Structure formats: structure tokens, C-alpha cells
Amino acid sequence: SCGIGTQALGLAPFGHNVTASDLSVAAVERARSEAVTRGLNITFKVADMRKCFETHGSGFDVVLSADNSLPHLPGEEDIRVALQGFHDCLKKDGVAFVNLRDYLEDEDRSSPQMWPYGFRYNGSERYFVFQTRDWSNNSYEVAMYFVREVGEGVPACITAGLSRYYAITIDNLMSLFKDVGFTDVQRLDGILHQPIVVGRRSTL
Image 1 (cartoon, rainbow, N blue to C red):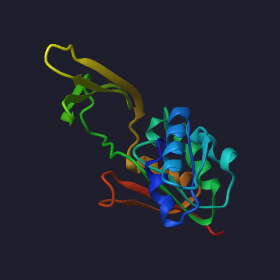
Image 2: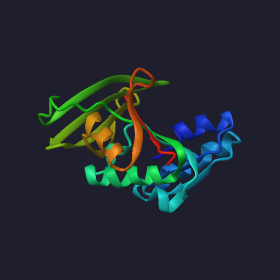
Image 3: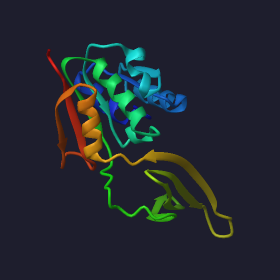
Image 4: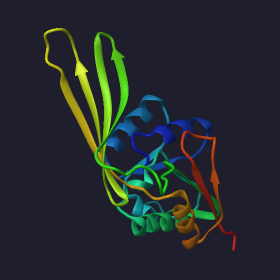
């Protein structure tokens, strides 16, 4: 789930041999372009994270899925399939890291919701950014709106992006880690802006 390459581009300059994939063709092309611009040697592929083992094979030291990517999958069975692939991609004693939002059982899931993110500026242009969330059971649709103001007398224009998430709790994710064979499963806080769940492939 490399997206436009945020983690891959950051890891490669430190000498890591990085392979990155994402379901989005456009995101992978952007990541590949950014790597070329920076002179980085990264292998990019277009792939569903549920097919990571079939796409990449095994023998990796680390599998990383960050920025709340895993909850894009529609439910726990699909997440289990992805985690099994993460496990199988690793060599013995390899480690998987999943960074995701801390979904809580008792959080407000009323619908609809609006979350304002304030104003952003680009030269003379001003953007007002806000997000809407529409919940249905444990899933929710997210729309991110960018209202662009270019100047007096010119109508504002709006760009919106839509996505969907499955609100899996950290405890449930850790249980799935264990179900597919990970050991030493832990929750790590205070490292990134969202929690990390880490598990190790057994040496046995």
C-alpha cells in the first residue's frame, strides 16, 4: 500500500532495498516518477495488497503498510487475507509493521459528520479543507473537500475525493496478526501520529 511513495522514498536513501506496490496505477506512477527525480532505485509494481505474496514472493526482512491503508479493505476477512500475505512475504524472523488509526468501540459513529481542517494558502489562492464521514455499521465513507478561492469576483471551485474505511480496532487487528501466524505481536504508541501494530514471523 505504498501510495505515492511516502515511506518507500524515505527508506531507500538509507540503503534499504525497497520494493513497493499499490492498487492505484496513478499512485504507483507518481511514486515511480518521484523516485526517478531523486535518483532512487526502487522496484514499483501495481498490485492488490491481498495478493502481495503472489506478486512479490518471500524473503523480505520487513513488510510495511502505513497511513491507515489496511482499513481500506472492506472487512476483517479481507484484512486477514492481506496479513497472511504479509506473513508469507517475510523471511523467518522478519517483521511486519501496520500503522493505522486507533478506532475505538465507543467512538461517535453518528452520521453524517463534518470535520473542518481550516484554511491553506498557495500564493494568492486560498483553500478551505473539510471532511465528511457517513457511517454504516463498522464502515464509513469519507469525502475530503477542497474549496479553492482564486480571487475576488471569481467563483470558487470544489474538488472532492471519496474513500471508504473499515473501522477495525487495534485489539481485533492484533488478534488477526496472531491468527495468521505472527508472534511477538505488539502495539507501539508515540512513534508515529497513529499506533503501530508489529508482529514477527517465527523462526520455526
